[in-house]
Image (cartoon, rainbow, N blue to C red; front, top):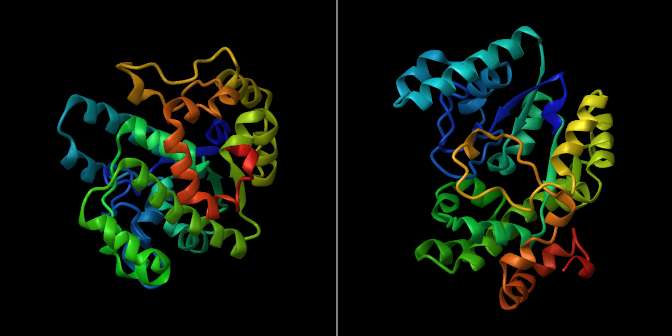
Amino acid sequence: MLALSSEVGYIQEPFNLHHRPGICSAEFNYWFPYISQKNGEEYYSSLKDTIEFKYKVGREIQAVTSFRDFGRMLRDCRNFNKYRMLRLRPLLKDPIAIFSAEWLASSFDMDVVVIIRHPAAFAASIKAKNWTFPFQDLLKQSLLMEECLYPFASEISHYATSEKDIIDQACLLWNIIYFRVSEYQKRNPTWIFQSHEDISVDPVSAFQEMYKRLGLDFSDDVKTTIEEYSNPQNPLDAKKNDPFLFLRRHLKRDSKSNIFNWKKRLDSREILRIKEKTGGLASVFYDDSCW
């Protein structure tokens, strides 16, 4: 929704392990890579090219293995060239970059928006997609463990040795991510921290305020599109077996009803377990009425 602004050029998840090399030539070996002042030099040049919309055609050609890849290359190259010529403001959207946010902000003078998600909603999404997480990817990043995740070292080691129940995995991952977010809140008062639920209740007002804080023009067209993609006539979930789902950057939702969709995806025992495992940290962001 922020990319609806005509002042913005959208960059999707360059930290993802499966990102396209034309968009970002940096190579990441682990999920949730950690970049800090100690190892930032290795990544700075590649990420600078990315946020300056310098598309790497040669790198992308080497990775093309299908007509779909080729079509995506043409689209991304066209978009990057257009963004660069128009001198648009880069919008880098990437939840996988959460542990590197401070380095990104300081290295490239970024404004940072952190969207906070309820632990039960997070776990329900993980369960619905059956996404297991390789916790060894965190252990293999010694800087990340030493500087950020040391309070969770024993738990992460335990979960890395054998696969655990997917709800338990989701709880630990949520605790790890939002422990970091809680630290960011203390250190970065100028960053925007916004709960997904608050946005969903009143999307127009929430985004209007966000646009204002980011110095973006909140036009009538932007308002109309936000209303279109969040109104009560929209479905609660994406259509299953949609062959074009991968093309839909913006998915239409009944945003207000979607807030508690997790109560349909989780049973009462799972909800209780999530609350028990995340409740201490969750209370920083949510009160009991949100359960």
